[in-house]
Length: 443
Image (tube, rainbow, N blue to C red; front, side, top):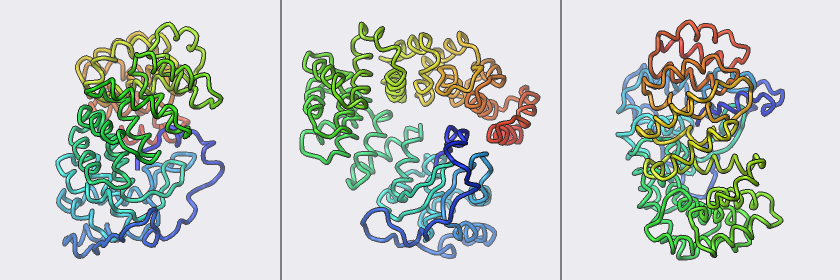
């Protein structure tokens, strides 16, 4: 389960609950119909007693938790049990545990393999069809996911090229997660994903899958843009709002009269959410529309998010990087999402450095600032050229920006920042302070 930085920091999202409520027994819960997973006991998967003891201890738990939980971002004891396993087990043992009878163990291990072991992703692909349900606590938010959903979600978050290939394998197998897997494969496998999406949309598919396939076309350029635009235009007339939204997303790539008319119609419609997405596409497609839309923060945020999905692909960055940089500098309180998960390329790094050098560290707790996004990118890129700006962000007034800067310090082993990190261990934001403690340990 991904660490929900924003959710953890916003205490209001948790109410006044001190901790998770007891959940159902995950071994008897199924999110969707399907054959039960035939798991194996610990003794059949690992032979070393010190690892087996840790695994059995984790298997007793009733829910999967992120590293920090609750309003104060307290360290999770359940997550700590899993970390102990990762430190004691070999890579081969971790892969073997994907077959464990406990969905708690399988879920944690599946996420670990999907995000940390790119060479072993073929071993996690079969679990995309595991529909065993498992309660989750992600930061402050409770949920119920299937193991298959956890696998796909984890692969979707990965930036490794191998994750794209694994997602394509899941998509090729069909099943409930096929369309979602293809959507997530689009940034790393744009050509293949776009063609598969076009092929699917030529026929009749259920609305949820239509949304995923249209989102592929919003992210990746199809080989035949004219056909892709025609398919999106057809879905823009749907009576399903979610399909209309996805169609509006895809139509930002279409400059023909029919597509622009469709966007204008959706933008003027009564459904405010559909209208927002249509306006975001018009913002990108028709430069003269931007002046009138700058004041609509929801539209601007969607534009930032849309460009962020495109920049996750190195190929997409080639055509959209200049626009993303210009918009980030023009509207620095937004566009944090644009660079946060962008594919690491020399050109994108230079763009991020230019933006960071022109913007001061945030002085308020506002979310989504452009500088915060580029610091997140520079921290992930692990380029020493980003260190001066990462260090500057340690003194920001925005917890989100500081946390990303701490991650950069940790990733680059920047011992020169030890003094600044030590001060942050006493920060009033408990979650930030915990991250600072972890960063100090990494140094």
